Image 1 (cartoon, chains in turn green, yellow):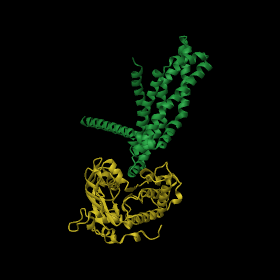
Image 2 (cartoon, one colour):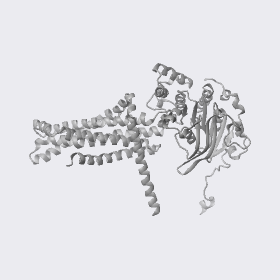
Image 3 (cartoon, chains in turn red, orange):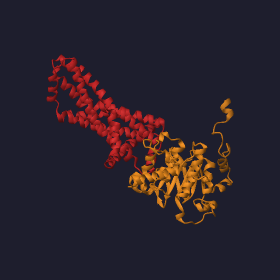
Length: 259
Length: 299
């Protein structure tokens, strides 16, 4: 019994210690942001790696999600004679929720896991120690550009996801199911609010961008420097990111849209 | 690269180096007063534990300027850990590590980084940045720490690569290099800022005889030509002893032997004799401690 309690205590302390290290890393990355002004190429390279290379998976996913929304939305709305509101429903669902959330999950799976593996392997092959020994702070040179790159890429990718999703809903609703073209767009234009819907969606994306890249980078930086350690860290990065995104989405939705 | 044997590059003053000159816990009567300026790295009362295991238990050790000092010992005795303690990557539980008169672990981060620009380290894996070419790897510290124009950086990089015989490999990526070439590139990078000392972490591990010969010669030549101080951590006894001016053998958390290679070779210690000659049994037993053989097989 005492052993069990001691084990619990040790696990709790280790978790708190880990949380502390994670926050110190976040502070270090935020503190390193000004150093990127002198090295913009480090940032553009990471926007390319995290953002541009994720465009295909994000847009294709957005298209299918939008098409499914068009189908399901039409089925429900037509029962109440409100099929013309399909455009509003598709756009609101995408801009408020699905765009930021699904994009964050996709980025966590594609770019987040790659970031964790890259940083973990750099640690395992002593590249981070090598930088330290060259009097170069790896947090500033390696982690901070990736952090800001993820932060910038996430809302842009979410916007692309939502835009392509709306087109997918349009193809299905208007093209296949016969919803009125003008009603689809005009109702969307009238009901989607810039602040209430679009800006809140962007805020969500920014928060998810911070969380997903932070978790991915911390897991890599804190990984046990062995192949098994990097493998575990990569898995943890995706799982923790997904849980954090879904949990934070609830909190943010309650704060933004709850009365 | 010269074709003389590494021994031929030795400074003559080191031939007669005595343990007393290295101070630390030298045997009583042999400890002599010496100028602080002679010692670049001074370690006193070093205690360090990891995962509940004591790696160093009151180690005293001096590294003299201009010499190649080898730290040897069996695997897992903390040789690499010692380099990390000297470079401030790890913090000791007790004791001090002074480099060029500065207590490494009392420095601020900025001061430690300034000190590190004067220290080079060759990692066991080379630790080259895999997304940069050989040229860019060697240029990296110059671009980070100097404001030299690119034309000057190019000349310096080519000089450093020429010194390690890899000027022609400047456009290769690290993945295209053999293990020995990667270490030579890492060596060129380590000396890019003309440091006062270089630490070598197991430089000979996994090298073929030719690469090993090249590395042995390079370490000695660079040390003497650039007036460096070199610390070589290794368990390759023959190769390391061939270029070292002074040896420390560490095991069980303490210094087991010290002296010039000849003095260590002649040491009257069964443990040192077993280590230096690679004997399979002796004070370090061949068999891992286990229950009695008859009990295991019959009971």
